[in-house]
Image (tube, rainbow, N blue to C red):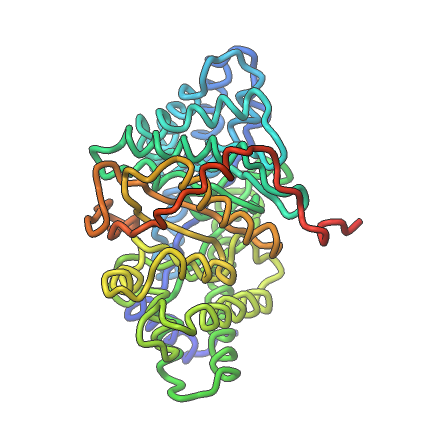
Amino acid sequence: MLTIEEILETIKMVQEENLDIRTITMGISLRDCSDANHRIACRKIYDKVTRLAGPLVRAGEEISREYGLPIVNKRISVTPIALVAEASSADDYCCYAETLDRAAEAVGVNFIGGFSALVHKGFTGGDRKLIESIPRALSETERVCASVNVATSRVGINMDAILLTGAVIKKTAELTAGRDSIGCAKLVVFANVPEDNPFMAGAFHGIGEPDCVINTGVSGPGVVRSAISRVGDADLGELSETIKKMAFKITRMGELVGRAAAKKLGVPFGIVDVSLAPTPAIGDSVAEILQEMGLERCGAPGSTAALALLNDAVKKGGAMASSYVGGLSGAFIPVSEDAGMIAAVDDGALNIEKLEAMTAVCSVGLDMIAIPGDTSVETIAAIIADEAAIGVFNHKTTAVRIIPAAGKQVGDRVEFGGLLGRAPVMAVNRFSAAAFVNRGGRIPAPIHSLRN
């Protein structure tokens, strides 16, 4: 039974501290849509997505009114298209991306994820076709998001896939140069990708998932920052307890909304992802949480330790609140989407190397970082490889969403608008890793992967 105090507390979180349901994401399996004729396959995909997701936006709006909680985004994730399209004889898979885009527009969602391939151990013909189709697919669609998983702790790091993906990122940036290379903001390169993640741009519907499922993503950096400010000079143990309790409440809210949506839509409830995902709005910043803990600026010495405390407490609070916590769950540190991160870069407190160190203890990785447009493919690949190594050797998800902004140099800015925000172009180490990444092959999995 909820008390009056708890109800009032939730109202305050929504009205004053930017608490929201960041996304209700419907996962849809397209495995039954494969066909040797790609036109038939695309028709099946369009029909299935629009049939199942047709009521999604309306259901989200109804639940938002019923509970008085903002539901910011309604989204769709689908089976990795490389798996679905491989049965067809299509020369490239842009037709599948165009179909997904039309379906997303028809049902009214802002993003659809799953133009994806899983190549951590090697390529099939369909995997390679999909990856090579990404630049044109993302430049010619508005709502489609792509992802590539290049590594796992079980099998190691596929350097051939990383080098190919580096070239794809560069090409995508060039094809969307007129919009500050925004195509790269819809492309994520993963290690240890989760298959139930509701957050874009990395969402897809995993092969072990049911035919259709509802996953929710909850976000509340402002709520956590306010809670920390109220405990004053409490020691770090008490600080952790405070964050855990707040994460518990946020998670319960997310599961309530997710189950209500699943019931209304007649599909199973999957997971709630309790993630501190920031926005460019003032007061909705993960960087500002770290500063509330006592750092002068995010990026100062101690930032990695503070982020580790935050991420762990969020996960513990979520796990106490629900048996169905999944996705990424923790703290995100995207640059362009976090006003505090942007300020830290502008002030010289935060660089890519420090961000990389912080990704060892956060929920994702190097996220929404703009770099000079003339950065080489090999350097982009090496950055991805470093991040993949952190994930593989620490048995955690890591990812890279990096924007080599065409025509931009250090000190320039890119402007994406909306949740994608804006970003200063950050300096990249000028020394080359070309000889290393061009060796190719696979970096073997660590010895602790042998767990059978």
